[in-house]
Image 1 (cartoon, rainbow, N blue to C red):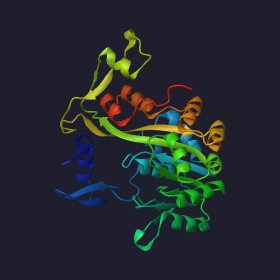
Image 2 (cartoon, rainbow, N blue to C red):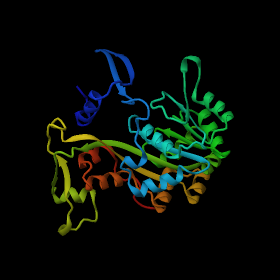
Image 3 (spheres, rainbow, N blue to C red):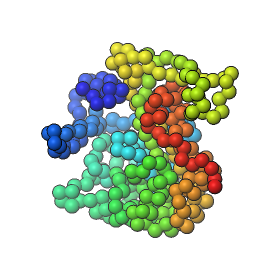
Image 4 (tube, helix red, strand yellow):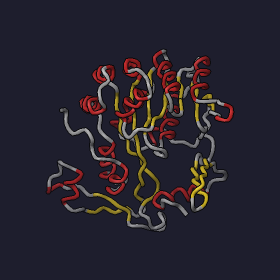
Length: 328
């Protein structure tokens, strides 16, 4: 029934308890007939989202992220591929700062979850109602916080950047492999480095992985070479246990039930702003970010494997090896 049975079990349980379900449907022709993808959106409609505290975000990432989203102005990005949970994280961030005295406006495609106290708008290609068009109009609505569902083109990027520089807090998404590349992506879209540097506050990148079923989770001791491949500071006498699911009726014999997110957070420091202004490479930016405490996705993924949330197989399939090795 489900293409990915590891996450299908929990999804099936939620679906059979839900009265109404929303789908985003994509259909394309192929040589074998039509190919259809159904993306399941909010399963229970209004306010069906998690808070930041419920999302198993590591405290070293969660606390600075909470501080950043309360800034009076600037841009905060969440990056990752399609289906990596970016919208869920952004909804949770808006929920965290949503109070009656804060004017929050969104531009989405489509609106996936309806939020009380938030002005939500949806793009409509049929009448040429684009992200950039709505964004220009929203700036006349005296917003404090704006969510731009995705920055896809120069015009949207330019307006969003200018908004961040003129007293607005802007949330948005970009499709990049990691947090550092989001900075370079904005410049590639045509935004001048001197505008990018002061506007960006932080970038969070994330991936979703299958979570070990809590009903059949078992600890095991892998071979020494496995630890040597992923960890460089394990002493032979103190090797930690790892975990996997052996399969049960609860998870439909898959060993997995639900999903867990891996995160990385790059806070833009003054050193990084100087590098951005001088049009430095993503490697140079990454080295500076590491000095300020940045750790890549795999670092967070391995922590969650050690804590028993997921397996090394999921870490390997969802994250790349560390791409910043030194400061040369």
